[in-house]
Every structure is written in C-alpha cells, then in structure tokens.
Length: 295
Image 1: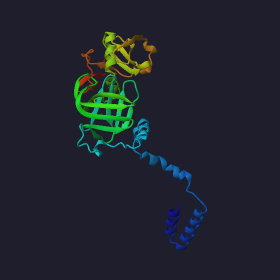
Image 2: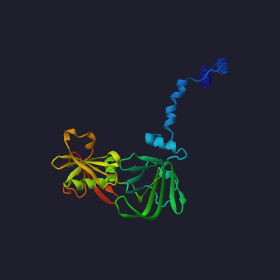
Image 3: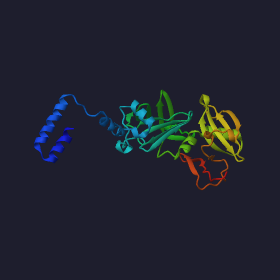
C-alpha cells in the first residue's frame, strides 16, 4: 500500500499530497491494519508450484515429503563421472519380479501387483566399491559383480534395492528401460505368470489384461482365436496356477480388456505393422497389437 500511494503521489506531482498520504499510511499501520488476506492467499499456489517434486504427481509429492533432505535433480546436475553406471540406467530382478527406472530425476520401483514406490535421485556415496543412493524410502546399491536379470540370464553389474526392510536383488543395465507404454511395462513385470497361464490354456491367445488378485495372486485375462475369454490366476511365485476359468464376454469387466498383447512364440505369423514391440533388455517379449490388427 505504501509503494502504491507513493507512486500515485509522484504521478500527480504534488509533494504535499504525497506527504499526507504517507502520514495516513503510517497512522493506519500504527493502528494495526494488516494486508488483505485474500491478496496474500492468491499468491500461494504459484509459490507452491515452484517447489521441487510438485509437478511429479501426488505419489512423488508424498514421497518427497518423507525424504525432505533429498532434492530431485536431473542427472545432468549431478557429478556422474565416477559412477559405476552412468545414467540413464535401469535395474530389475525376479522372485519376486521388480524393476527400477529413472524418470524425471526420480527412482521409480515397480513390483508386480503392488503400488509404485518413488524416491528422489541423489548423489551416491562410495561404500566398499559400490555406489549407494540413500534416498528414503529407497536405498539403491549398484556395484560390479555377478547377478541374475529379471529374465533369468546373467549380468555383471549387481543392483540391490531396499524398501521397507525387504531386499530386491538383480542386475543394473545402462540405457533407457524398453517399456515405452504402461501396457508394455505391465507385461514386462508379469512375464512369468503370463507364460504360466498361456501354457495352462494350451492354445494361442492374446493377453488382454494383467491385474492383482487376492492373497498375492496375479490374474491374466486371455482371449483365444475363437473369441473365448478366460481368467487365469497364478500364485505369488508366478509359476503355480491357482485357477483357469472361462468367462462370458458379456459379463467381463472393463479391466479385462485393456490390451492385446501377443507373446513371442504365440502365433508369430500374425502380421501387424502398427504393433508396439515390447522389449526386455535385448530380447523381444512380444507385441502389443492395435485394434486394427487381426488375430
């Protein structure tokens, strides 16, 4: 208010009026006048929008609050020259299946049928020859050494992720994760139950959905070439089939037809120029067919 009144007085060119206005303002301030609450509140959202992590969504915002001492930054803002594996990189393992990606300066941990866990990417400490990223709620360790990938093959850079006192062991790989879509990511996280269910069905079929069921089971919806729909469920080990039931298409929930994934080795002769190739490392896991693709 003081700056506004002074500016008006100067524009009018009347020094006396300016002095009077200033006196009035000083008197009002002495009487306890306060800035208008509405004008103060109006600036809050803009200020909040500049806080680190708020543009990442509710989950990242919540996790960054838990890790208040860590600030998410891009890999370019970190000194990566001495890292064992320079970003971008990702990691994964099996039993249980898990995958770690780097997205917009955040570590993102995915586990089959469970919510994503996110933590800000920070400068690692070198501990016993390993890079240790201590970023609550995750602790990520990357070191040179033999490891087993999420596909069961061998690697030479070991990765360990600790969350909620549970250790997830696997391999770290340089480059971006091959999952280009949410459906592709879901498929790569669930290849073991997908393969078990396809084997149990015993005929070519598309995977139309993967979703969690009770007691740690993973459900896989399948559609055969004649249009028959099935719901299969694998136990938490991803290998043991709990049930395989036919489903009436008219009674199927919308969650059972979210994709059209064709696993490698199942009807490879099916052609679809617009299909999205789903890769896990250097291997092609299958293709996501568009609605225009015939099966």
